[in-house]
Amino acid sequence: MEYLITLFPLILLIPLSLMKGPSAKSFDNIIQLIEGKDFESPRRPDDLYRATKLLLEMRKLYGSKVNAGLMLLKQEVFKAKWDFKHLQALMHGAYFQQLTMLILIIAMVLITNTMFETPVWSYVVLAILQVVAVVFLHLSAKALSKMYVHGGRVRFNNLLIIQCLSISGLSVSKVLSYVNWAELDETRGKKFEEWDRLFSESLYLWQQSGTGLEQKLKELTAELKYLRESHTKSYKDFLSGSKFISLLISGFVSYFVYLYSFMSKFIG
Image 1 (cartoon, helix red, strand yellow):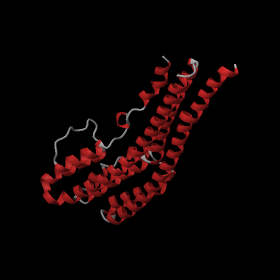
Image 2 (cartoon, helix red, strand yellow; image 1 turned 90 degrees about the horizontal axis):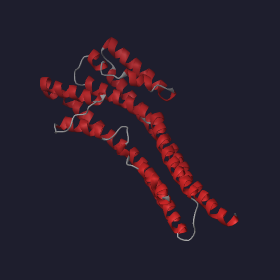
Image 3 (tube, rainbow, N blue to C red; image 1 turned 45 degrees about the vertical axis):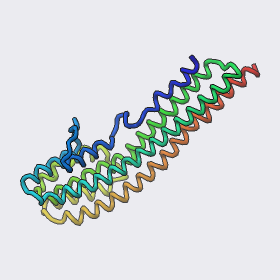
């Protein structure tokens, strides 16, 4: 029974691909759509997917005129996919560290239990500590992603949509109708305050005059690249801290709890 209690936290160490959240599949869908490959259409297509479908429909009407927008979209989605997979690999590495620590704890329990009898409560505490460590890691990673990654991704998607649609000959009103203002409002904050102001002003001036967007898009792209790189660095730094704390909980604290339960038998 005690072994089952100790092994219980293993059920939490499931792959991140099985957890709710964004996945690389959304990027693959867009690439496959552009390349004309067969795939299962997403139930809830995102903004980039809908923009891609619009460009493909336009290509049927206007031919190669739309190819520049599609090629730019495909190129940037490829880059975004690898950036996403890099961040995902960091989380997989963190979970692997937790799994390694859990295996070491189980090995310690098995070895000491062959020599001495340990109270059942210590196994329960060990299992709780492992669960707390994994849940803390997952929740902190989710919070950090929302703080430092999600906002940049939302702005990247909207900026890319404007770039691809505007060079494909769509009207100003049609292009602006594909901007997800709701998501931009949800992710507003001091981190993107200046960029959001420039973004709104650029689109307003373009709407009024119909010109001058190309240069503004270059400025917005360069600024957003800098912001995303800076925020990604902060995400990695804080994630490293979260990994350290979760390992302290699952390893260091667990070891001393087990050592206390082990020594209390002799002291008592």
